[in-house]
Length: 497
Image 1 (cartoon, rainbow, N blue to C red):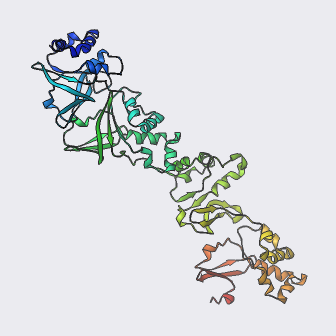
Image 2 (spheres, rainbow, N blue to C red):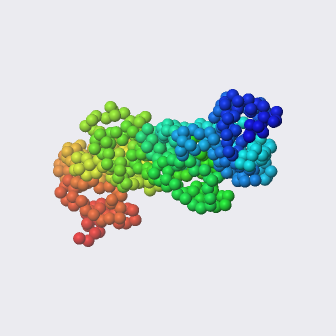
Image 3 (cartoon, rainbow, N blue to C red):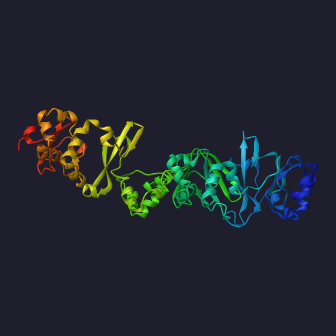
């Protein structure tokens, strides 16, 4: 019957030629009912797609009758073109989408119906369209056209989206998924070490079945995504949301699924960024390898530590002797989780380097803050004799008295060093101490300035304490007076026993 209607009009001569060539006329005549979207000759003249095949023509046939009076905006229908394995079942037809404009113009996909509801028989209707309908592209090709950045990410981590011929739903957005993360996190995610986490993020936006929103009724439903997590779709009248994100365009039809355009990217917070992942993002993988190799890898999982990491471009493992790598690495691990805003100039922070020179107590690291955005760590080593001329008398006294040998052989000590003016203020006493007859007394004075434990300024402020000295006497330290620290005997500091 449909062939008879078509053959009566010259405008369908090209279509009839293709129907004859593909041997579809017997099938069309045998249909008890259905819908035929018939391109006219002009539509074929403007067609620039692939060759007209039997499958292309079957995509214009629906096994169910649809009159325009029954069209719903965004309605999704099945054609008679089947691609086994691509959709729900082998007998599921490739989809088309109905649209209406101003209740006057009717569309199927992008083709406008220019002559509607032509009677064929009581169960069959023919609609004339101004374009040849092209079967949907594969999801991979469609994604490449609509969201190239997302396509590249999925391709990068080899998500089996187009390796397997099965249906999917994908949510896309003009916003880039990786923009949800800072630069370090982005670098981690696109590194090979981050592929597993990136894959999880990508799979959260993929449902392993086609969800055509034009077919849904009002309500709320949860769907399990490829990541194993749940995503929520809500329909209320004409408004559709996914995880409360507005859907801007529904049902971009693919051969093996469908794409929906959202105002933003649905995002799962299941990916946790720990220290190790941040170091990878900072391009410090050599540092990580050394930490693991020397038994310090557990510190990368400790939440109450600060890691001073070197990036791959500045670290050279061969420059550090193997027997020094463990203490060197330990010196880069600080006690406490220190944010830059909490650091101040000349701050001393305990490290994980327990030095034998400090009687196995933790070595401290100096913090230098020149400006809020300019922070550096570590000893800016200076040769005391060359740069600190104000200490030259004390240094000379160490050598004259021989106490320098005591200091060189001591571990974990603190020196309280008088400046040159302090010696001058002693007057004749100073001259006596430097005379050979006064060297024994000079030794006692100098040894009294050396405590047998490391005392750091920040630990002295606010406290009154005493420490044993090389002279085997107690030295009192009073730091309780407005950030001032004074040392001496109880009598000198006016402290009662």
